[in-house]
Length: 125
Image: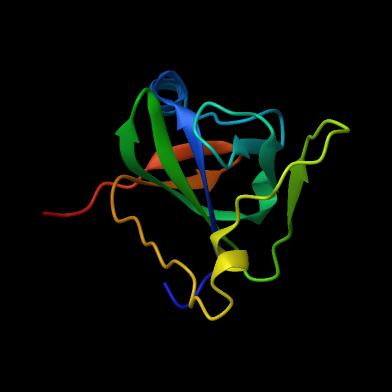
């Protein structure tokens, strides 16, 4: 795979088991994943048609990190739910203006999306 953009969020371990059994993740044509494990304030929304591949990362405290590799030109939405009282954003990039960012690449397991069904890619070993 050549250079790609991806987004990372968290899903409950129960959802991972459902993904493995049914190949389904998200609503009819939309995947919505929280940016913080167990919290729903910040969400990423990606349409199935924009997903190239889905990769699972480590699990901790009942939540598994998930990396969604996007197709070229794909779009995603970031939503933040907040109350009227002001809160500081917890963005490390604001603290370190010259931070190169975080680069993460998950290797296995990998899933491809065909007809809105995720199928695990079995590596020949």
